[in-house]
Amino acid sequence: MRILILMLIIGIFAPSEKSLADKTAELTAPLPAANPSLLKHQAQFSNAQLIQVQDNIYVAYGFDMSNIIFIEGPSGLVVMDTGFRVEKANSAIAAIRKISEKPIKAVIYSHGHADHVGGSAAFKAAAPDAEFIAHSNWRRNINYISSGVRPVFTLRAFAQLGLVLPEGLHGTVGSGGGPVLRANGTLSYVTPTLTVADGQWLEYAGLKFQAMHTPGDLDDGLSLWFPDNSAVLTGDTVTDSHVHAILSTPRHEPGRDAQAFVDSMTRIESLNAEVLIGGHGDVVEGKAAVRELVRNDRRSAQFMIDEVVRLIRQNRSGEYVQSAFAYPDWFIEGEGRGDYYHRISWITRGVYAQFMGWFGGDATSLSPIAPKARASRIVSGFGGVEGAVEKLRAAYRADDFGWVMELASYILSEDPPNAEARQLKSWSLKALAYASESANERNYFLTQAMMLDGHLSLAAIAKASALRGLPDYYQAAEPIGFLHTLGARLNVEAARDTNLRFKIELSDRNRVYLVDIDRGVLMTSEGGDGDVDFTIAITHKNLARLCEGLATWDGLFQGGGLILEGNKDKFDQVARLY
Ligand SMILES: [Zn+2]
Image 1 (cartoon, rainbow, N blue to C red):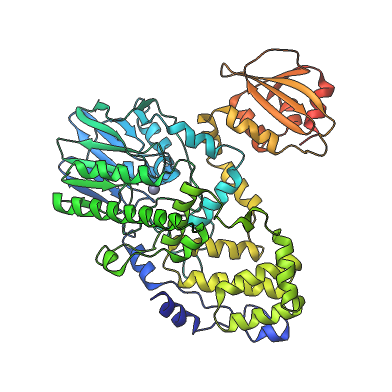
Image 2: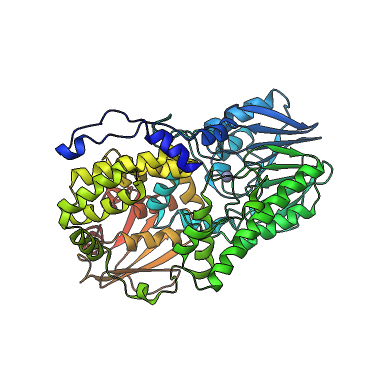
């Protein structure tokens, strides 16, 4: 099917975007298109509506990437998840207000992903006294996404969701788990006011319900069980959105554990619920339908894990798993799942990595040729850059787009400005994107093509994200996590002869940190005493801005955002290292 669609789409060519060398001028860019089955998948999210599930359960569906669920009790409302953006959450609140004027008493996070917590500030504004509830593991993920890897973590999230792509056949058609998402809008994070453990019973708005720890996307996964409704709210651990169980992700989530994910499904199945409402996709009603959905999800996910382990036991590599994994035909028939979100080849390779890491068993990879040297040898094997570009044109002409992308990368390693290699790689990314059944693959490919074409940079994405959600997330994070970013951003060469120590006192929290700079390395520890060259008093927020490079040492000092005590020369010495 994939190949057929590919051929259909690639058979129609648009005029060339621009002329290159004569031989490439006859080649043309692929015509913008989308895989029909992906478009069909996306159509399910197109209608924003407030769905009444039972007398007192409502789902704001299609308002944002994820479902926002309201349960009405005798004295108020309980809310599960807040959507991605404050503006969309406000629309959902306005919709429920036409039905119930009761106060919002509690807001529960199914897990800490932005598409479930990003709208939280809207609920805080609507209900300042509401309890915000998360599983006690919530801070691990917040610390991770506030750490030094943040810019690239963000790039991957933006790319996967298609946030900066144009909308339509030449851009994004959706995220695979919800409607088209744009980068604009306000991302927020209200720090939980209450953390809960597995099995804990809660009572809000006159409703009695149980929190179950059901790790899935993240290790802070919570499901809620409402016995009076026989309803379970499952976050992203089980969803009726026709996608494979996302046991791993190419973005990488340190808190995702494939077997724990499936074990959560087992617990959800055991409830024998009448109604299941996931974080994305449709509401499932009726015990038989709920059981079928959860059982199918659990069975196909367990198969993925077991098959990966079977391949591991044959001493296979992750790369092999990615190319070889397949469900037997008899197995997948009738389960109605597709690659619409993550491709199954990504998930299984990620499961391999959870078990075995990066090493695939071939000792060659313990001492590999460096990427630059490999590229050089391959290009020279094709008769140098000229010869390799000739092969590139032939491969493009033959619709061998995967090979075009790979060979173009080797050529660009040898000859970075090579316009033909750039053009053909970009066109191949687009050709594969236009044919892909996976919304995420489409978005990743088109985002990379945009970067290759020079229309987007990592710095631009990092800045865009920093200006929006960053302050809220950093407010909730532990400083010791993002303080290490100061070390990663240090100008190591300039710091090679620096040897000093300073103290950071958080003026709005009772915390003290000691920082040593020693031969180009910045080392941080919490608390502690001893002689220091200087001390700075700074707010948590300004420290976060300083660490991420959104504020400078000097700028904060001049503007009063940082109070210095001690040796100003040493302070200036540190400032010059950034
Ligand atoms: Zn989600």
